[in-house]
Image (cartoon, rainbow over all chains, first blue to last red):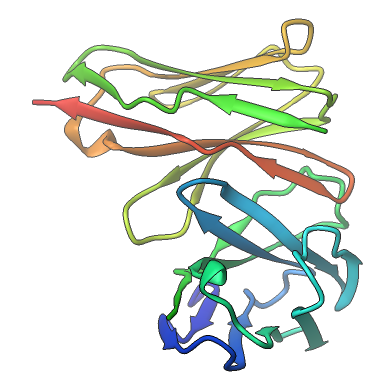
Length: 116
Length: 110
């Protein structure tokens, strides 16, 4: 299996621009997670999907962030408009299970976002 | 709010010794506690999961303990090797909830 695939691996954009991050989870996994990692705040859960349905988006920082999962093999995280404080590494992860927390998560390689 | 604390300072140990990393948490009673390894420029990789009703879990040179009274987990790497150098993250998990610590950087000196 190819593992979790994320694109792009690096993104540099100017403040105010729209940014779209993409994720392909491992086939057969029914849970998908978007995380943001910074030195100061560590790894923060942004949103969690189970069977393509958003279950918990309480970690999404503000309305500028949105996420979709149109099917079991694809998800996007969009930031519009982007700001310098959004600069971070964004990870997508997937797992089996129905969300009780008992399943290991498989992380993608991450997208390093820099907003100037 | 829930909080996880891992030693933010790097841990340096000599090759062959046992490394012990600590994870403390407050304001939460997780059903599970997980440990991950993260290398620079890469995503975290799952190592071990322990349930709230388990005291200890082992996998090869790794051992995890879980004390729900102290609200603490200890992660041990025995016979440490330079290849074990990485950042180790603990994570609390329960129904629809995953909370990661900021990680402890381990360096094993040859």
